[in-house]
Length: 175
Ligand code: FES
Ligand code: FES
Image (cartoon, rainbow, N blue to C red; front, side):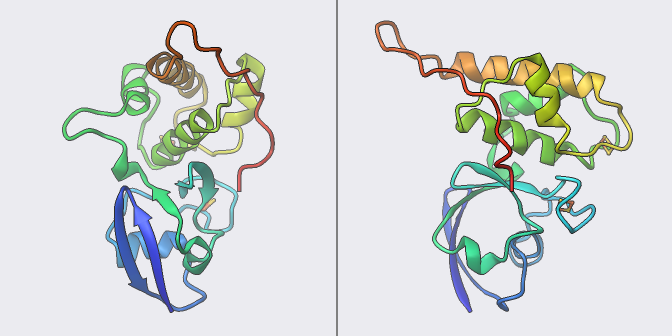
C-alpha cells in the first residue's frame, strides 16, 4: 500500500505491506534510526514518536494507520548543530548513559509539552514511568525532564496580555 506521511516537515510516500509498523517504516524505509526498538510490544517507550503532536509507540502502530499524519521523530528536533532544549537538558543533567532509551524520553516530553501538559513533581514521575531506562536510574532523567519542560514552557510563554492556558495533568493517553 502507498502511504503518505509528513515526516519532520517533509512529505514522503512509502510503499509498505499493511502489517509493517510505523517504527519499521521510519527506521528501514526512511532511514530514521534514531527511533529505537527495544521491546517491540509497547512496553519500553524507546520507539516513541509524535503523530500529529501526540506521543505514540511506533512499534504498536501500523504505517498505514498513520497515513496523512504529521510525524515527528528525534531527527526532527535539533536545529542543525544546535540541540533541541529537551536534548540539551538531558546533556546538562547527565540524563543518559548508553542513550538507547533517550530518544523515547525526549519525544515523550516534547509530546507532553505540545499537548499542553504541565506536570507537577508527582505527575512528572508518573509520566516518566511510562518509559524504561535500564542503566541510568531515574534521578537524572527526572531532573533533565523538569528542566526540559521548564525551558519549553518559557520558550512558548504567552505574550503579555494574553491569557495563559490552564495546566493539565497527564492522562493515560500515551499510545
Ligand atoms: S519498542 Fe515500542 S514500546 Fe518498546
Ligand atoms: S541510558 Fe541506557 S537504557 Fe537508558
